[in-house]
Length: 292
Image (cartoon, rainbow, N blue to C red; front, side, top):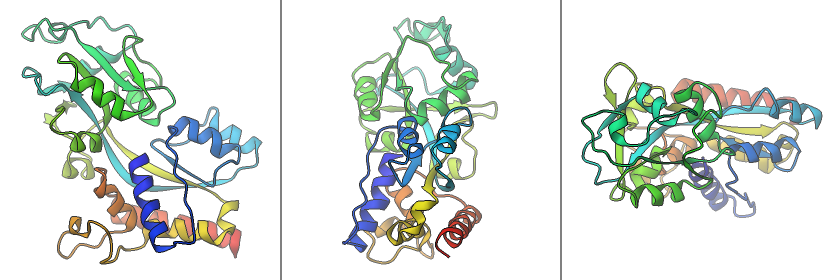
């Protein structure tokens, strides 16, 4: 989520040079802690707010919020570039690798024709929305994962781990893979309909299952009384102009909003037009309620 947030904020500040939008990457879980205690006005998140603990915390502190869908992401499965035996894993095989009571120690434990190479695991830590989404999608329960893996709050650390270990497997946002293609191999996922890679078309068409997810921006309602916060929210869904950095990522005849531009710029994916309109309407209704 951090690259998208930083990209949109950077462009907004360039166009509004009297406004500072500080962007910090603490992970979705830690971010919601700060958001729900009133420390931040905006929380970008790679999952929805938890009904069990985060929503009650917001309610206890009198924090009312709106949720805007701003992008799509495909969670990628990374391997070492010298891994020449595995091109695709089924969801069941991924579950066997990552489940809490996993018995997978080598690649040959997954498929007997694969080498007897020790399998080492790298992934996001428990403060991450990526961790929450991945564990629920693959093992069936949020937080259910083997202890035999190397967790990190930083996907770049995961990439360094996987790229330096021929027997490694890891997970993280697809955008990080496309920034490090020479150092990683991308593994396709088979959810029963064949092997699919997390690419723009497969994610936007929701063919890359179950690892396609929505990304969100949460705004505190009371913060929308501030003009700069209102304009920042609206900026997400404004159409980009010709002065946009890397404007060449826009195809001929295509119209993008800033959130879609920011997503494409950093390896995420755009949301459907109807979702853009729904998010825009949600924002304007909240602004009308708060600011009149």
